[in-house]
Length: 137
Picture 1 (cartoon, rainbow, N blue to C red):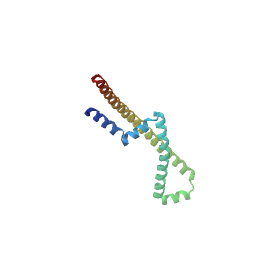
Picture 2 (cartoon, helix red, strand yellow):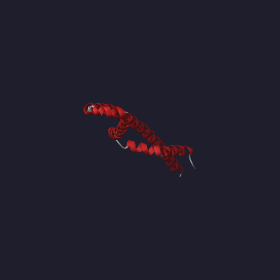
Picture 3 (tube, rainbow, N blue to C red):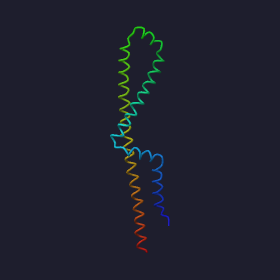
Picture 4 (cartoon, one colour):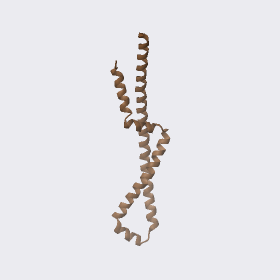
């Protein structure tokens, strides 16, 4: 006979094992610090690309003023200013990446514990049905 409680538990487990659950398993396969470091490294490369894109757009916007600026040959002051803004941008962006990684890791940890609790409950129901079946035989 089919137990509706088991069907519900297996449905919950199947939903948790879907696409979202597979991502959570991958995230939780890391230790927290390793996951955060990987996300910061990804953030460093993506942040550098974003900053470069922003700089290209900004330089295109101020092209006329840029010609007069370079006529005065103040390259070093311009480079220092760009590096200062790059440092500020990257510090903020990597901070956001680190906080996001910690929050995502904690959410995956909670989901994993919930999944394991449902799985334990399902195993327990199967064990109880085996015991009751053996008693009736």
